[in-house]
Image 1: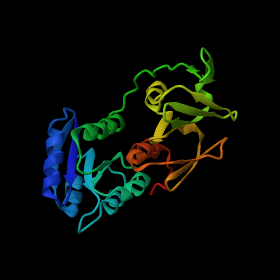
Image 2 (image 1 turned 30 degrees about the vertical axis):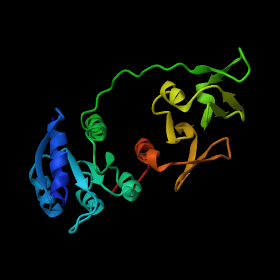
Image 3 (image 1 turned 120 degrees about the vertical axis):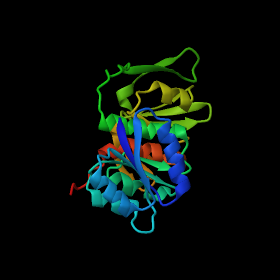
Amino acid sequence: MINCLIIDDEQHAIDLLTHHIQQTPFLNLLYSTTDPLEGLQVLNQHKIDLIFLDVQMPSMTGIDFIKAINRKCKVILTTAYSEYAMEGFENEVVDYLLKPISFARFIKGAQRALSLIQPSAPPAKEESDFIFVKTEQKGKLIKINIRDIILIEGLKNYVKIHTRGGEKIIALLNMKDLEERLPAGEFVRTHKSFLLATGFIRMIEGNLVHLDHTDEKVPVGDTYRETFMNLMKDKIMTNKK
């Protein structure tokens, strides 16, 4: 069982999180408060595993609170403002939930916290290392090694597959089918028209991703930014204080 603390200066936000926690079998709400300073006292007096923490609060921001507790427990940030996502992940938060928080989105963050607080090692799913794709030429299939795919670009009823060998293969596929077929965690959607291989990311610059073996600069759309940054957070190195 994971013991939780909610800190949010709005009571209706606490009420919603309380409801979500009560619906989640492996979470136990130990305490909730609208005052971050009271939250610090609770954290010092009780064993808290996970904090659901608002960002913008009058007496102390959520980011300042995280720095004050010095990684004493795991934190999920809850806020109506997406601009704090990068700073949150730089401070090693488990997840970043945008208000209003649906139960479906909440449970994803809770499951992530569970995997970090009570880790288990499920057997890795084996994936095929190549695929065959249909081209515009009737009856022609092209074999593509999955490890060679850098980027997939959506073109209405087609996709353009960029490989590290410099090939750009036009295939009769759609983005959704490819996203479901390729290995989870190794490919991520950053935009409705772009799916990229995380292993080839060279640099993230604002809302653009630079990749190895290509001059293409891939945009990160607002709809996909949260999922993309969640996947990247474990790779972001920060100074440990």
